[in-house]
Image (cartoon, rainbow, N blue to C red; front, side, top):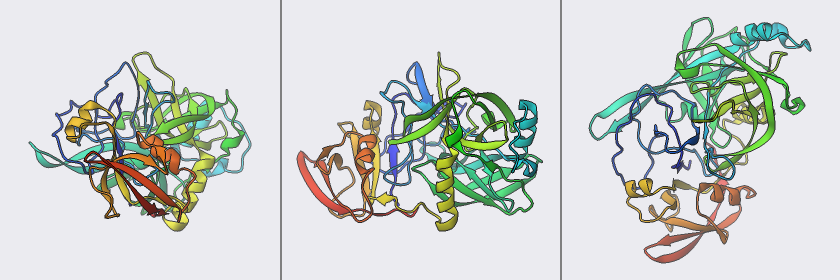
Length: 399
């Protein structure tokens, strides 16, 4: 599979711990970073709450060419992944009854799980060590299938799920789709109460919305309430434009991978992003459940989402002078770190795709958006003062 990375100018990392200074390194895959705020307004990734911030300096890991990275439309702000988990009681499945907030909260809390992850990372000073993180997940089947965000479990060497009753299980990562930021986990348990999947197409602005999750990785089962603030909000996440629900229900780091519910106790969205900044509050985002349903179905049936194109390239999106210095390159842009094609090399800077200008991962993915498996595309790169064009055939990405 291919890997993409994005360095943002305004990211705020998930970890509450101080960050060690990164060590300059040549082009190549790195772990997701924990970054300090670098502007007054930031939309920050908050999918996992790390116990340590020494997890590397690269951000926005994406598992294939079209991967998820968040930046607000028009620039100037940034979005944070969130994690929230939700389950629904069986007696509500066929009900059209609108409940009170306390009644709905009591139902959906039973469908929430807390996710704990462990990643092995390396530091020049500390050597190899483990970093823990936290998020949330949604039970979707009685026999132990759980949906969470891809960014919550990305690069995890171990995942644990803790149910509302306190029971803990080792969770296997069965499949994921980086493009939509969704992942499928499986625990060895039966008799679980799955979430009731609703219909996000019926939502209207002003509908009551409840978010349940594990904020800060320590407050599992937290319920917050608000409204649906906007529908089909287009947000750029890791170079990929996503159409998300917007809510003012409070979501925080640790809420990622969970859900947004209506007063019928139905899951209408998977919470995955939050805006943050000195003067920002009440801006949360969720993947509409109707989009998530199709992805989950493919993950369950095939282990991957059919039709995703793969360029065979691992990419690093360098958009700041600091990151350029770390990679020892003299220009910002989209760089190749690895390629299945012998004609494209690590260190090549992509300048065009199909004769259309490429400046970053978002522009690269926008051009790929309407391409299909089997299409032949041209990739133009800058190398040693020369411009070189290479033709590649898109294959199907299988995770």
